[in-house]
Length: 227
Image 1 (tube, helix red, strand yellow):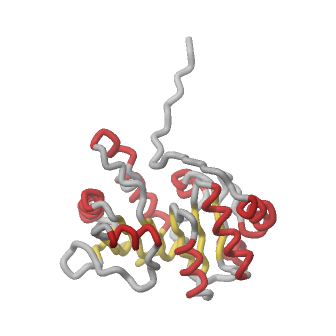
Image 2: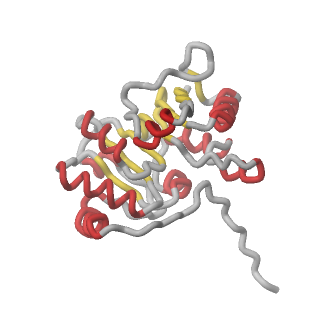
């Protein structure tokens, strides 16, 4: 009898792209200090950052520009970014090296695995999910990362009163996020009318977002607080 393997449904497509020489060099030289290898052992953020400051976790940081900007603006906080695409990891590590930015750590692995196995309970002060793949075709909606199981993981790792900040430029996905989180009794919606919030000042505007604005695209921010 053949062994059947259950295929994991990913919320991303790994379009690797080509690493530039600078990105590869940054990975080679900076990963030992700033990179976090995947394992099934829980991380200790106090040891990892050598302090007890707030930890902000971002899932899918793209090329890392906005994560780096936030880390630069708030050096008193710790930033942990997860991104599966190595060119983005390399770009961020180049920025880290060029600016001697010490409050960033990086994982190059599937965020679902990292959350489940590496992030301790009640250890994250703020989780950021900005512009995740919307999987806009109905047959692909099951690939969207914002699903009940994921939200339960977010609630597990956030500290009491921790913040879950989401943003998307796809209105249909924004409505999905809103309804899914409003239906969850683990979070409170921080908007005045139980919908969306104005763009928080701490979230940088990305090049991708600016291009969307020029094309007339909307952007929806959501802020939820763990009960």
